Length: 277
Image (tube, rainbow, N blue to C red):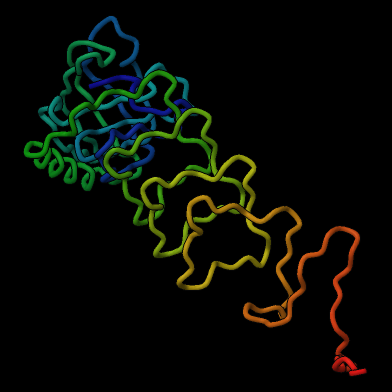
């Protein structure tokens, strides 16, 4: 049995060890110790609070509105003995028994406990406790159980379990490097069918920006440019739609200061043969 090691910092919830579940809970239960070690003020008087039954132990939580040196009281099944259900005629039904102190439990020796159920529920609680204690003999609690560390507190507001179908990271996964920050607002996971980049893939260079709005992926069959290919100079514009490869009309390059000269299309050019004298 352990004293003051099974409650949260604000005394409003019980600390349930990992791997255990709550089987039953009763409110307005009185806890007293007809026989207890001498020289300890923890066991004096009657404490009122909530009684919980888990798959491996009984936990009593003193009401947070009551000032008492015993804030919580935990009894593992393997340290309980001589448990019985008593049904007096003019008093609430109660459960009594003997409990041994647990190693590092905050006290030493043994004590006799009495749990009085002021609002009923003692019979059901006792029956479930006997079944759970019998089952615990063949399935001991998970190894590594220990009281919560100093400073333990409930999770922060807004905490929620992972979504359905969440799986642990693959083998070899390591935490992000120092300086890693969460993705920016509006980030969404890749679409279905997305695969990892090919070997040798590297992130874009510094200063890289997202493509403009309306950008579309290249058509099927598009291949990357050959090695050594350079982008066109700044300000380059594509040729007009009327200019196509194979056209028979072209203009030769002219030096600076000259304009291109083409024969007029309005009147044909005729060259008369030289006259004979």
